Length: 302
Image 1 (cartoon, rainbow, N blue to C red):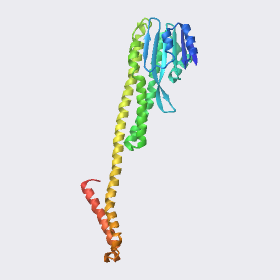
Image 2 (cartoon, rainbow, N blue to C red):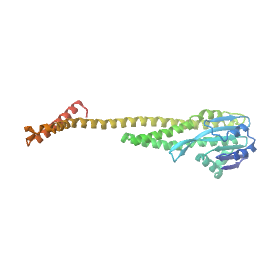
Image 3 (spheres, rainbow, N blue to C red):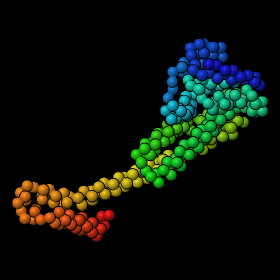
C-alpha cells in the first residue's frame, strides 16, 4: 500500500509492506542503489547513512500486539532527499498513520511541518517518539494495578501477570534504547540538514530521553513489585505448609494411639472390655492434642 502527500514543493511517500514493485518506482528519485537494496530485508538495529544529497535512517518503534498482549518493535525506514521524504514499514504503525492523516486534513498542522524536507523528517520522528508516552501510561496503569494486588493478595496468577508486564517493558526498551546514539548523530548539522533546525533535532533527542526515563522507572517498579509479590507469595505458602505440618504433628499421637489399641491382641484384656475405655482413649487423645498445642504456643511456632 502506497500513499502520497505533496505540499510546499515537498513530496512524502508512505509505503506499507514494500515490494519489488515499490523499489522500481522509487528508482525515479535517483536514490543510491545501496539504499534501495536495504528497503526490503529487515534491519534489526537503528541505522543512519547520509551523504550530501540524501539520508537513510532506520528506527524501531513499539507497536501493541493486541492478540498476544505484547509490544513489538516495528521497523520504520526513512529516506530523505532535498524535496522528498519516503517512509516504509512492513506493518501498519498507528502513530505514523495518525500523523499522515492529520497532514491530510489539518492545514495548519501540515504547513508547520512541511517547511522543508528535514523539518518534516524531524517532526515525524518526534511525533512517533512522543506517541510512545500514551502506551507507557497504559503500562503504568497495569503496574499500579499489579502493585495493589500484590499488597492485598499475591497469587500465582498475579505472578504470571507481573511476568507478562515485565516482558512488555523489556520489549519496549529493546525498541527505544539503541536509538539515542542514532538520533544524536541525526541532530547534528550536515550538508543536507541545515544548522538552523538543530534545535528541532535536539527536541527529538530530548523526547527520546524522556521516554527512556519513563521506561527505566517502569522497569524498576516492575522488578520491585515482582520481588515483593514473590516474597509475599513465598511467605503465604510457608504459612500454609507450617499449618499443615502442625496439624500433622498434632494428629500423629492420636493416630498411633488408635492403631495401637486397634490391634487384636487387646481383645482379651480387661481394659478393652471396660465400657468406659473409649472415653479414656478419647480423653487421652484430647489431652495429647492440648499438650502439643501448648508446647507449640510456648515455642512460638504459631
